[in-house]
Amino acid sequence: MWNWCAKSSLSLGVYMCGTCMEGTLAVMFSALTAGSLFHALRGKARTFGQHMEQRNDFLNLTKETMLFAKNHTNATRRCLKFIHIPKNAGSAIENLGYHLKYAWGLHDHSLHCLNASECSQTVPVRRLCCWPNNVTACSVWHYPPRMDEELTQNYANCSTFCVVRDPLRRFVSEYFYISKQRHTPGPLCNQRTFEEYANATLQRLMIDPWIDDCHHVPQAYYLSSRTGRRSCDHIIRYEHMQEELSKVLKFYGEVDLKRTKLPAGVNSVRGRCKMENLSVSEHLQQRLRDFFHLDYQWGLGS
Picture 1 (cartoon, rainbow, N blue to C red):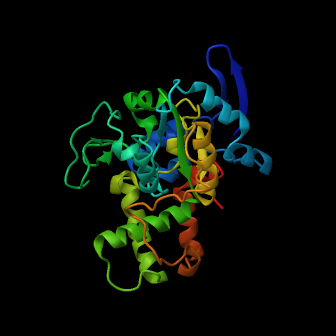
Picture 2: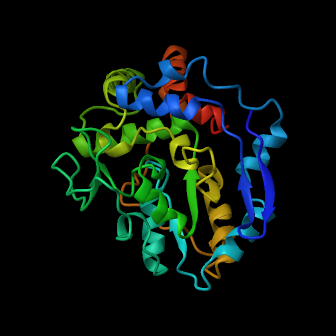
Picture 3: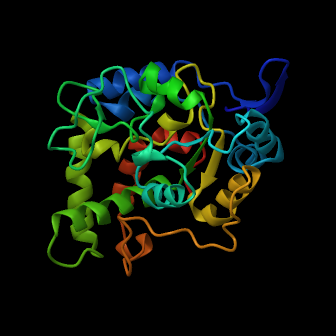
């Protein structure tokens, strides 16, 4: 069970901490590199809390967390970094940051990993990639900080924020995104079309979980370090992004998003059907829950 707390220290001030599930992260890393994610997690992950208060304490932006960020900003507004978890409105937030003179995600040229090199053609329009294995590359701003010591330090120099969402809805968002990129013919809001895509994608993920520019990597991998310490200071819920991101930015002296609509991302698609309209079978939903097991341990599922 995750046990979140606020802790004081003369050198570090107030920060949020948590005790991680014993052995889970080490197993997660070996499973990812071996290409079998959720099988290695079974039997290792502990049940995530039985009390809703703990889940709410973790997900909500608490006053203590806000004060932590305010006190740890380097005197200037610039020291705020965005941890881009793919398919969670990252492009929209990068666009917002660009207008606010923040270099977030795609625009953050300070991000670097130890094995960085130019991206291959499999990751188009990308300037720098990290390589979790010998064949797959991920954009440096899509790569989980915990996977690279140098990248971890890039983010550790500032306060950070990220956006999380329900894992199944995130997977459906990727389905619409990739269908748009491939110009998939026929109706997309169709159970058979979606399930064919989902089954084929899950089969690929069993071989290599880093495919598609890290778009399927569990969100839990972006939220904590390998030692279990929380690496994203401000965890914003996708469903309440306007309100919660506004709170974060106000603490940094920025605009109140309650009066300014968040700009659409380059990948946004209007008029898409909702997940409920896809009539996803229970069997497939369970397979996806198994794959994103750690996300549910963090309480990210609806």
